[in-house]
Amino acid sequence: MRFRGTKTGVVVVAAVTGSVVLSGCGGGSGAEAGGDGTSPSASRSAGAQEQGTAEVRAAYDRTAEAESARMTIRMQLSAEGRTVTTQGKGVISLAEGDSVMTVTAQDQRIEQRVVDQVLYQKMPGQEAPGGKPWVKIDLEKVAAQQNLGNQQIGDPAQTAAYAKAITDKGVTEVGTEEVGGTETTHYKVSVDVSKLPGGAQMSKQLGPTLPMHVWLDDDGRLRRQQIDMTVKAPASASAKAGSSTAVQQLKMKTVLEFSDFGAEVDAEAPPAGQVADMTGEALRGARQQS
Image 1 (cartoon, helix red, strand yellow):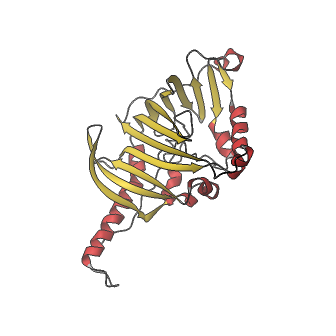
Image 2 (spheres, rainbow, N blue to C red):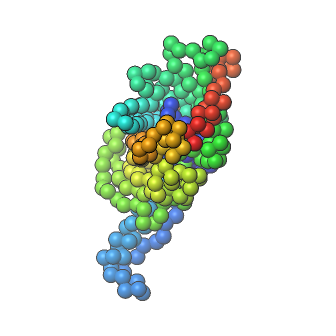
Image 3 (tube, rainbow, N blue to C red):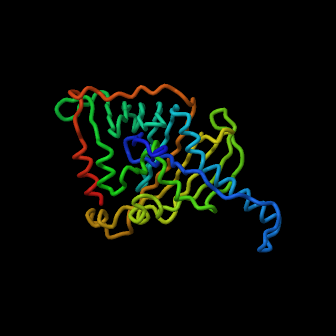
């Protein structure tokens, strides 16, 4: 996802569902009965819903205005009775999409950077091909192969595509809660998957809607976002695995939190001589899963 059409950045090893930027809008509200005979109470309810939708749609632009923030991300993947948890923390440029993170996955600690749409990772004690300490993947090329353009569902800095994917009736206020010591308003959101880039293909794996929860502070900025999804394996993948049963499913829960807005982000690419390019392997892997 991307803030205001800026550069791409991915945060964890596996595909992660990131934030979504919803460009502002939302209609006005009225407290009195309209010409269609709507009751005053119904009008107030509709008006509150429209206001909530406008707040959520505007939240990502308001968050982006901070330019940078500290970020934590927790992802839980469950399939075939097994659960794997990944956690990451670091800083991200909301204006550029660059980030510096430390990711822990299956008790392994990974140093990660995203610079100019390229993902770099270094795992202590392990070497990449050629004895290089770092590997890199060109995220733009991977996204292009998946027909997503620059919009990747696994990218927490890229969010503009989701603006048109939330309908006026897709936002419900849940209540107020504290997140990281900050008072927030909690909203439940429904995203129309068909309206996302590559939505036709994504709908086959995610279903028609994507449930999401967001927590906004008093300045209308995003403090927490949670997405729960069930990803169905493509039929071709099941056939390759020789499965004669139902299509396999992967459940993903991703929780993203922002704090310390304006934090300094010092994201630099490692020296070229220390990096092995694994983009080709990533592209081949993606083709095999399609």
